[in-house]
Amino acid sequence: MIEIKHITKSFDGCKAVDDVSVTIKEGQVFGLIGTNGAGKSTTLRIMTGVMKPDAGEALVDEEPIYHNVGRKERITFIPDEPYFFSSATPAIMAQYYASIYPAFEMVQFYEWLDKFGLEKTRRIATFSKGMKKQLIMLLSICTQTKYLICDETFDGLDPVMRQSVKSMIASQMEERGLTCVIASHNLRELEDICDHVGLLHRGGVLLSKDLQDMKCNIQKVQCVFQTETDALIGMQNLDIVQKEKRGSLYTLTIRGKKAEIIAHFSQVSTVFFEVLPLSLEEIFISETEVAGYDIRKLVMG
Image (cartoon, rainbow, N blue to C red; front, top):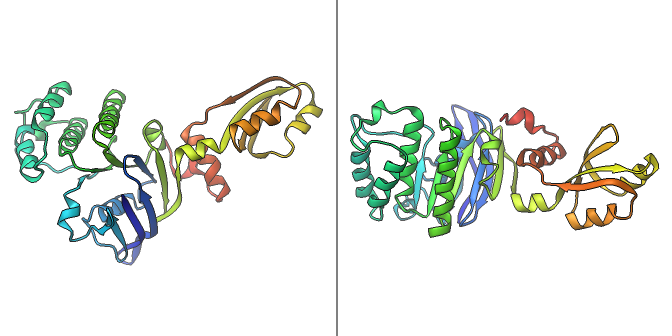
């Protein structure tokens, strides 16, 4: 488990991170969302022990990470701009990673390298941005560490490669219990992979919640009532976050359990009624509006 407790970090008098606290449980994908300048990269560098906070602490498996070699060995960090040795090839970088991480899976690395169409003897300096992103992900997953911390992992990848990388992460979670933290400025990129999402805004945590819990406690309903009187009765005693009407069709975002909402509408005369799944963006819009923010202005996909 990774714990960030009230960390603060300033640069030249400007607070990049302000009293941030999050808990990342084992075996999950934690998505850290925020616009550029929200404090994501600084938070990740403190989380991995690269940087020391001005206040607060970062713990990995109940021990402080900064100056703790034993805990750092459990983490692989992928920065937003990965570094490779000058004139290095994938084969050379693999040898380097294997010298640092004893459990490095060399056979698996070359299998994935071939699958992704990356030449092992080609100079990395000639790779495109997307190819470099693919390579650093392959190297990092093959380290076999317990935690994988990624900063803007999907930036520069085409849709097919994004899905391939997500599939790799999912398979490693299933096979060896990998825990992954992914920071991104794009909410939609994490739609189908995250278990828990934290939203950073202006250096602070605006929201940190389990996605399944959020999905269980908010529903999207589309319905057509028999009459306007039925509509008035049907929408009474409900915690309606958003309401939209097009013709006779109502689209409602309602807080509450699915079974409770279905039971409520079963007592109202409707011509049409269904409960639809909400997207991650729709869930966050409803959650952040309660706090007085509009995520559409904070995180643009």
